[in-house]
Length: 174
Ligand code: FES
Image (cartoon, rainbow, N blue to C red; front, side, top):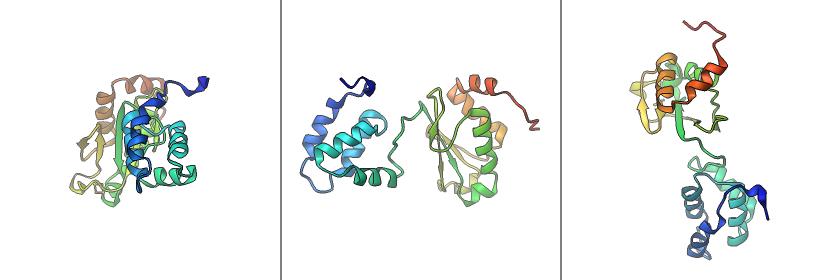
């Protein structure tokens, strides 16, 4: 039954639920464990937590969406964080965002259709001297221009190149 449930193995949650059942303040650690197990928080898992810990689903959604550490969508194999804090914004973050959207098909808070790249916008990474800053799979890339930025991301992602070719270049950015 439940063939639409893809390959989520619900039993992985059993020991987590057992450990935290009845404990006050269990929700956040349970969500953290669930995300560690599945890579993100699938809706079916949120429902399971709601049922088994007897916490209203609306409360779970509230917590999961409030904290930036939680992901409600499947994440890509690669993670791109673009800083749009004040310093980075002034130094050209919007151009990087534009490049990511146009050339890589990435969108804030989303994952590319091929499942390779997730992007999120952050606000100050404490590296303002390197603005504008992007973090690609945990590696800080500073003083990025759209072309160097795209090269850097593509090198990391590899297959993003394919998508860029499909999209093609309408504008003459040079
Ligand atoms: S504003 Fe981007 S690192 Fe500080």
